[in-house]
Amino acid sequence: MQARIEKELELLRKHFPKLKYIKEGNWFMIPAYSMPPGWNREVSDVVFQVLVGYPGTPPYGFYVPAGLTFNGQRPGNYTEPSATKPPFEGTWGVFSWAPADGHWRATGDLSTGGNLLNWVLGFANRLKEGA
Image 1 (cartoon, rainbow, N blue to C red):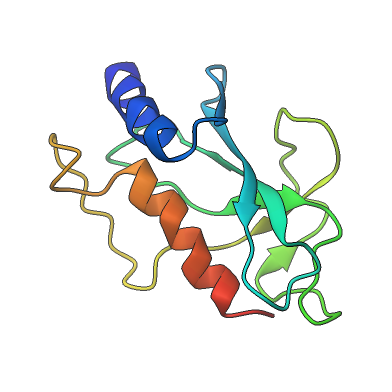
Image 2 (cartoon, rainbow, N blue to C red):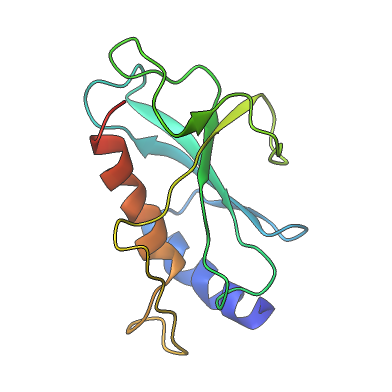
């Protein structure tokens, strides 16, 4: 699993050079992720965790600093504070989210199967939905 994560880190850092990674627990932070219009922040840190069994076990959910609203309302499928606390400063909320098709097709080749870059870019789909 760790060799795969190292490859994924290289891919992610090409797009998000300020990415932070904590090996213990496999936590990733994308600082200053662009938020679509309607949210009370133009950018937000976004955090996710890769669970044991990855890539066979797909990632699920993503975290943002507490206080996120869309047009003044708390978003759906969002819990604040999150039951699991990411290993980064502050209080966090978590979106219960997976890509719309619900399928994770990881392969040995990052360019032909599911990968963490596609996962992170997919957050925009959820955020465009608004509340």
